[in-house]
Image (cartoon, rainbow over all chains, first blue to last red; front, top):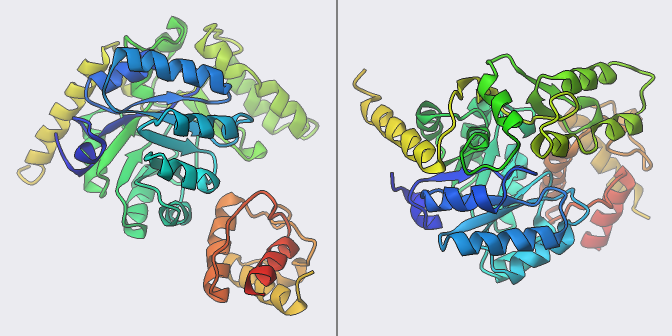
Length: 312
Length: 77
């Protein structure tokens, strides 16, 4: 399924793999890139040395285009911003803020900058600063979520900017991809679906939780902190929700409660105390597959649907 | 320090655009105190740009209404 986005990014299918902290490492990202999508290494809160090592590992496994996701609230954002320019990373996606202060350096390094945006205003701001495309991510997604949902956000962002829009949030199979194209997106980004990829190195307990999840099994916590997170229901997320309604609990205590929880999920598989970030489509995922199987399957289904859309 | 004129224009814009009581907006008021999140701030900054015919870079130093007014006065000289 070659379209404007896939040729602009030099990839076979117009699909990005979401940058998920503690999840999107060189193993997953290189497998996605080798399967014809755009694999993305997530920097999360990790130091630059980790990101550099992952970039080098990925380059040993693939010569295809790839990206690095930079979480702008990370204490290491400045050094990772320099690193991606030095390493001439083909694509940089950003989350949790406006990347404008880094744009000049990245554009000079020939990087295609694709910020994740939760609103039309943010989309217009980053377009003006030189973004190559934007990822409009709705609140169905896992991890940090915005207020708008994909169905409402994507067409409004498409109308607001003149750069390509990539839809994210709530897309789990070819039906979601086809719908995203109908909304005006030129590409898609999927995160949750890749959690259960065979090349994804997270703890097996994490994968099992996603595989076992039903439609109602995700929950958003942390609204009181100003940065809500969607994750699977478990003792940790239920306690977090209780804390949120506990007026004796300070913001500091709430923050402290969440520290390290994603690592406990992804690395240790701690089913009680981990934060298993995952999107609303978790209930649609029922088997582990390779990245290639995931991507080709999704696009076969999407193409079939798009071709037949007007024929009933 | 920014002129009262700039401050008043900004307060009027915020009040109208975000439906906030204009009397609650002073030089020292922060966006946070007005219940405005980062996305509201982006919308407002674009409205300020349009009103004053300037380009504003959003950064973490823009906390209060006075900060924005100062920046605008600096740019428009």
